[in-house]
Image 1 (tube, rainbow, N blue to C red):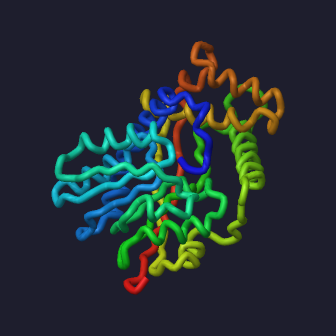
Image 2 (spheres, rainbow, N blue to C red):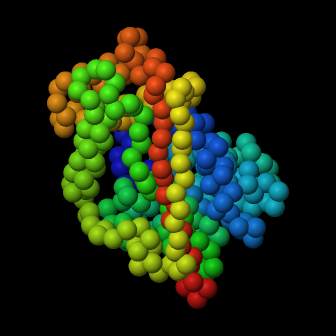
Length: 290
């Protein structure tokens, strides 16, 4: 998390949500980490701590060879939790936590060393000047090393097209409302600069070469287990946060019914909810003479 105030966050609740999300996507993250790491990689720098699930996956992948994982975040509560989680994996992997903001030009000085792999998932789109951020992150990569960012590929879907409450197409309207919220958020962000190109082009403009991308699915068909049902509720809670003034009152009423865990219409009680999303990984290499 970077570039945001953390003053009013319920950290216990927030960390629990992040831990639950880590547990839900652990198979996909383990596979992603295994794909990203090269046999010669020993140092990993993760921008954005979360609850430490990805840092722990990197530590596990480095367990046989040894190495180090450095976690960077502006929120000390997240750093402490992520470091503790990653340190539990293997004593052959050094874990370091650095409190710093990815939007700050002093990031390289704060981190203090370059890494074989710099990894930032769902971070860059939140930063005011995204191209400048990519150039900043590229400086953290040793020559010959790589920068990998993960950004949204396709919008998450969890509901049938017609849930039997209100008008059909509720989820599509909620997704449109979230996209409207995001564009308004970026437009109102201090120092915001548009990025009128795709992520691969932006990585190339940041000075990286051999840029390539691929996507991975988080695909949980119905009926879901408890982890999946909890993930559906987290997704609907996120959509609820952004929908208040952007969809019709009837849609809000239906969404509140889906989120009411004591009610008969709660999404977690349905056997037809599912979880499907596609995230895209974009990787570029820093030139040897970079």
